[in-house]
Amino acid sequence: MRKNLVPIIFFLASLGLIFVASGCKKKTAKQEEPSYTRNIIVGFSQIGAESAWRTCNTQSIQTAASEAGIQLIYSNAEQKQENQIKAIRSFIVYQVDVIVFVPIVQDGWDNVLREAKEANIPVIIIDRKIRTSDESLYAAYIGADHVEEGRKAARFLQEKFKDTEKTLNILELRGTDGSSVTDGRYQGFREILDKDAHFEIIHSETGDFLRSRGKEIAERILSMNGTLTINDMPVDIIYSHNDSMTLGFLDSFEQYGIQGGKDVVIVSVDAEQAVIDAVAEGKVNCVVECNPKIGPLVMEFVQRLANNRPIPKITRIEETVFTENDDLSELEPRGY
Image (cartoon, rainbow, N blue to C red; front, side, top):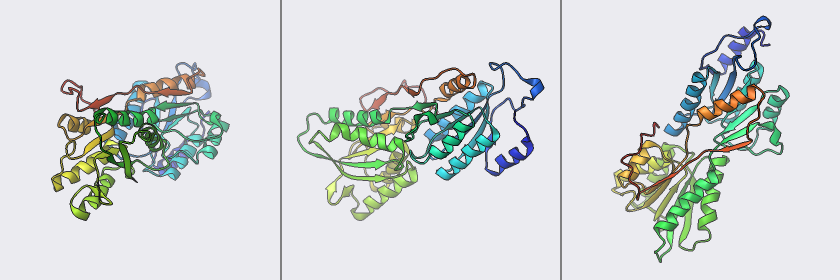
């Protein structure tokens, strides 16, 4: 049973954790309910709010928890792993039923997840994966196949330039180094294009998935001579690991009179509404979808775990690709 809740609540408040959903009444020994109707409490650690995609991902979890009558304790890590580890330890102290978190990077989780396991609290990892020698430290991973996202981006380029004879130069904007998303999109892209002599990645740089960093990189390159060149080589293609960095580049292009989608081919990942619109307007050539709306599935798995029912270890999210060749006029609003 959860005891001495007042000091624990003050402890959580000091860490910036937020109670989000319904069902805040705690059980006592005299109020024990059957497992299928009892209140479920989930600790959720999000990496931050760096993009419209991330905000939508958070809202999807919060809404699904509320609709399921699940109490959610939310923590924004503000892009710092140490904040996430601190939040997870606070969830353990509070004795939540399930921990859900988006790992900002892949490594460095074993100790805190071992503490959760010893406390008999199952952990669901979403969106980004971890590296561990002990797969029993987490119950499930729910998210996209980021390697396949990279492959999809590369396949679009191969199809678009299947009749070209020249070598095309690629600028790659990586996401946060050390994250499984970045590693996957980096790996999948190269799996396809490293075998194709028509493409050469002439520069790869991290923009941390941030619009401001995308614009900063674009400004630095363009300010050197007013053109999109690197080491005197023209950039023919930009491959961006997320839409925020893509939008940062487009912000700068307007100032220098460069037409995205025409003067330079742009392939992005996420499919935020702003970039879907940019594809429709001819400013971006292709965007690979990464669906943030996984809240209902996460809460379904939470309920199964809380009631000692099995769940799959890995669940992939269905996604598609939007290109300049598609009619996007009838596409439903993305909501992010």
